[in-house]
Length: 110
Figure 1 (cartoon, helix red, strand yellow):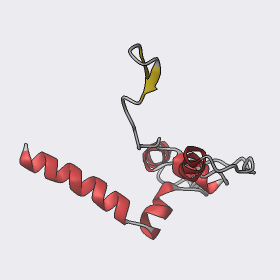
Figure 2: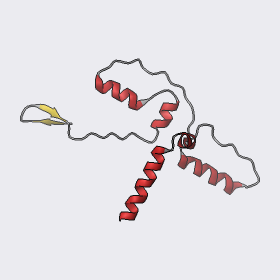
Figure 3: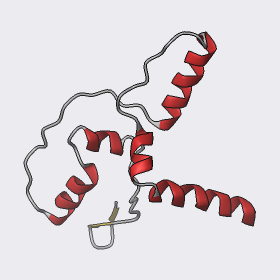
């Protein structure tokens, strides 16, 4: 937002609908930021969400863990984290399919 000196009012100069990579992790522990954002924008009151603390590993983190464990010793057993982003990628593949197909199309056009 920016303050317009002509009429001494605030003007919206940008709207960014993207959320951060950890929004899915937040939703898993009980905080749905996009939903709360919509409620706030519409002026609808809501209760402070209850949440729980849990560890979460996104796909890049999982790859790093697997690489480090494989490099240590292929014979040792290792523990894979419980909450992984890849599980929701399989249950709802459309967002990732769109993301990667969009990247591929951009590279083909370039």
